[in-house]
Each structure stands twice: as structure tokens, then as C-alpha cells.
Length: 178
Image 1 (tube, rainbow, N blue to C red):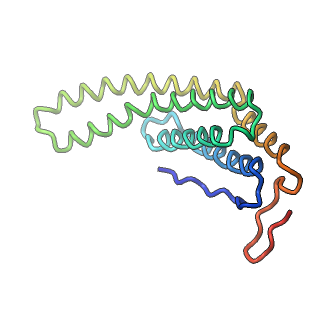
Image 2: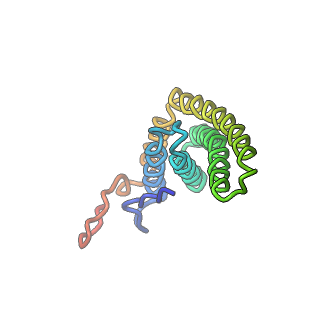
Image 3: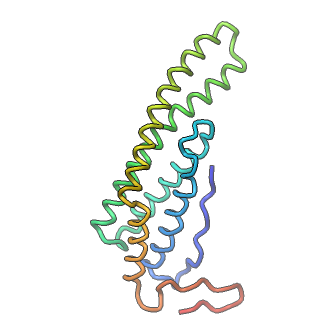
């Protein structure tokens, strides 16, 4: 599983709104880092990592809800949930196929035909999930989910008290700006 990236510059002197902006910015970027090759059924970990990243992103949108414009946040959250659902639809057969392949390595010889039949059925589910995922990703691009996440970051920063906006994290041994 992809490890969550650290969020720079979080400390007690950072306002809630600025903290929300910083965390959202990092967690949104993590989602899109996993997008290239997401439809490749031979790289099932990419789907898993992107799905985990969407869960982290949802948590940020829920935990820091007061820092974002309500209506825009709700719309973005709805789209992030739709993306997570599509990733889940694709991920479930991925996991089942992998488990059956592991089982087939040690299964009695007579189970081979049954395992292959199950894998074939799951491949069909995987293809359906992939179609749903492709359509959902295309829809998120059409709706400019990335841009709307960036707008939420900007709105939170705008709401941050003066002196707390986009302050660069201090270098070790230096005083924090602001």
C-alpha cells in the first residue's frame, strides 16, 4: 500500500483553514499520482493505492469541512465518493482473482477446471468494473475534479487569518515565518 505523504508545515501556529488547505493539497495530489495506468488489469496495486488515497481524501473533506465552502465541498465529496465506488467495483474482482491464483498453486489437480471457470467469471466482472472506472475517471476529468479540489484549497487559504496563509515551513533551526 502506498504510504501517505507527510504534510509539511503543520504546527500549532497554523490556522485551521491553512492546515485544511495544506492537507487537502497533499491528499488530492496523492489520488492523481496513482491515475496513470489505472485501467491496467495486470497492475492491481495501482487501483488499491488510488482507492486508499480517495479514502484519505474523503477523510480530509469531512474532518476539515468547516474550512471549505459548504456547497462546493459537498459536490467534490460526492465526486470523490463516486470515484472510490468505481475503484472498489474494479478492485473486488482483482482481489478474488489473486486469491484464486494463489489457491490454484496448492489445490488438488481436480480443482483446476473449477478455478479456471471462476477466474473467467471474475475476469468478466473485472472488465465491467474497468469500464465503470474508465467512465468515472472520464467524468471526473469532465467535471474538473482536480480543479475543484484546487479551488477548495484556495478558498481555505483565503479564509485563513492574515499571517497564516501559505507560510513556508521553517527550515530546521530557523524560526517559523508569520
